[in-house]
Image (cartoon, rainbow, N blue to C red; front, side):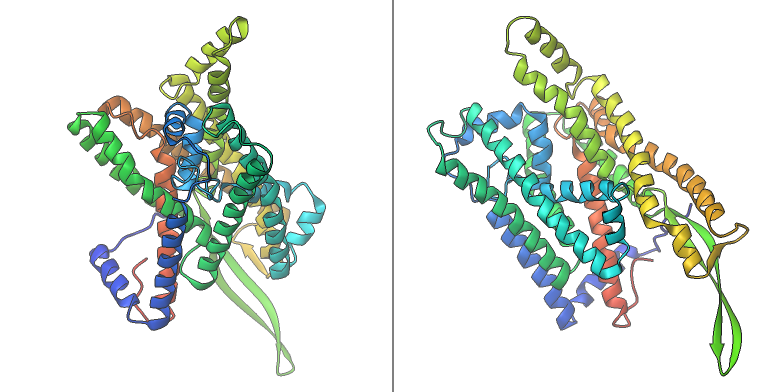
Length: 438
């Protein structure tokens, strides 16, 4: 495992690099275009659908952990029931579904192996799949609003349809904005939209912490723990194991056959699953408690059972966080192996005349890589599980209860920031600039 190594004086160099980036007109235009699109997104996030009782909506979000989790990806647009309240979460869901279906559907496997045209087809299928997912999520949210008397109960028919269409259209519009950033700006557009939403919600979250508690010392300790977690996330995101690879092939030149060889390495990351296991785990653990809260008002045995489940799956209960840890570890192994099998590293190495030193090409190479990735994934899974539960541990130590879902936020923020810096570095190095991500 090789962690990233930051040279001395990295942060001054980073600031200098950001300044120098604006000296190149085309690169400056890319950065300004990206910032402009993100500003447009934040403006749209404040445009609500009609007929909303904001006071009742605020009360609903205070008592519903699942909606608070989904609001994380919408940048606060969901808590305001904006026309982009769904955010890009339907697209993320569609992308995950496509990744999981590709290994089990032969047609999708064939399309994924068609190179650039195959990726374009897969992207088009993902876009089409996003629409029904957005419709289902939008309809569920509108139904919840009507049952909670947040949306005018007399609003029927065409008005509900208009609200649903506006929410789905808002999601598609955000996806289009994200793809514009990817094509004409800097970084991955979809990731940057999520990044902007999380950053926009941080001031209110921190302000809520100071308002809800007078434990200034506890908040200070919480901030220190957060900085340590960010450093650990950076280290584990950049850590990888290098598998030595030797290339050898025959080249016909000037009427004679020559044997050429070269060496390289195959980098296997310790955390190749990213934040996906956290999303899966939190979504599953939050769901039983959410359903139980709605059934707890019933009388009889159903209400009593629901109240028991509501207490067990409360975010303040230890069982809740034990399940989060176990599910994160499980999903990390599952998702990593699914993605790893799709990459077909052993087959691609053999096609390109490469082989791992000391390992026969073909199935032996595949078995060897499987063993390595399993060992690496164990470390990555335990790390992600720790990241998932550390806010709860920190809240027990510091007494600050307002930031219980910040682990996913930090993982997304750090991952998107590192990816954007790498792309900015590549743009600068194309212009013979001394990069700062070494």
